[in-house]
Image 1 (cartoon, rainbow, N blue to C red):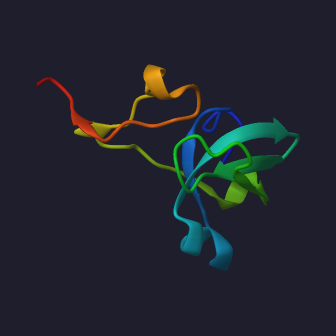
Image 2 (cartoon, one colour):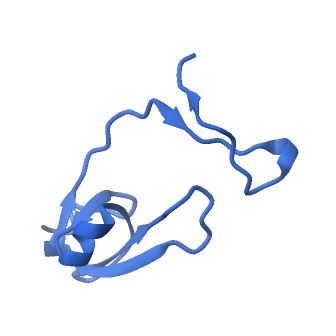
Length: 89
């Protein structure tokens, strides 16, 4: 995989034992032939788990359109998350 195929913000899977356990991550940074991939557990996670991987170990992933999403609740303050709501309804 070349840098042209993966950019910061791309969703990827990392081909490694740890990467298989973590699932889909997001490229946070690329430096030379290595990338930093971040993973989050819950919305609003301020310290995501990160791993560094060689670009050749990354596989781009296309995400399906979401039916459910989370949004912040203004009345409860920043960092709070609402129950999932259906898009388009």
